[in-house]
Length: 146
Image 1 (cartoon, rainbow, N blue to C red):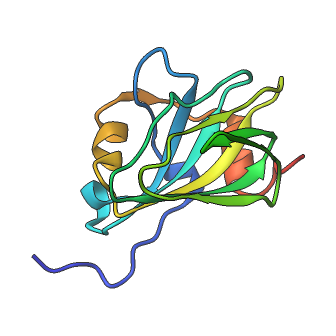
Image 2: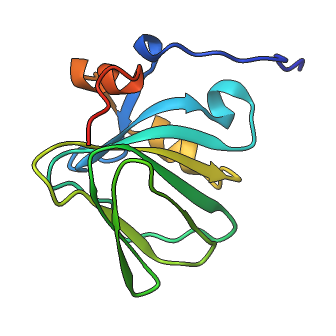
């Protein structure tokens, strides 16, 4: 199988997924092994007001977050870290973590999982979500607000 030397995406063409129907966060998929044959998963993770990830860990993968818009808190290794636009953090394998949007506005994080460790399969196996106009505005840089 020949791989593409360059893979491109436009924000308005992204597909959204919620891993479980009751989750309060969802993902706009940028690149992943299932759709693109890459070794990592890169998404924009969107947290509803009051939303959060379930507590989770990864055996081999490192997970990196970069906050695009909104604010909240990250909890890892027994520590709390306030997060907002421009903040970044990496979670090492084996560290249980939770990301929380404790505000009344959406929180947007560029999230990278490397290697994939089944992340893309979880996301793409979930429930499709239509990205809102607000989501597309943030993804295109027109809606980036604190």
